Length: 161
Image 1 (cartoon, rainbow, N blue to C red):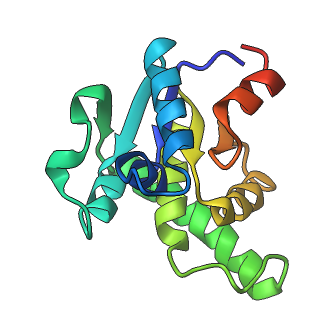
Image 2: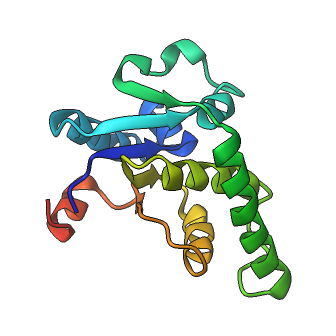
Image 3: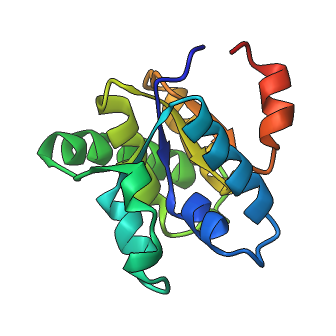
């Protein structure tokens, strides 16, 4: 798969901007890889809002990111995605330990699904992968899920670039 654009989430941004974080170097390596390979990095206004709860807007590397506004088309698909996840949670097919932020994950996945250039979602939130896989079991999503707990060097060795 040749990457065209990635959607980074709040967790990735937090790790990138916190040089004391355990995953800071991994996030920085991915960020530098995307810049070097001219892979477009996109961020949702949803992630920007989440980051600004505790972070400073001025710290976000906006000049290196394309902003995606959450719109009506995204909202419509996100509602369907949330229904899938909540149904699986009620049925016990996914862990009830999943956090209550499921709706934000489904919103971001809807944006990644609709925005044709995005073919990868990049995060450090391993729990979000359960939500991704649950939705993907019922709805085709044309983007990969990358967890930066796997280093970029390990990932490049796995994936054909």
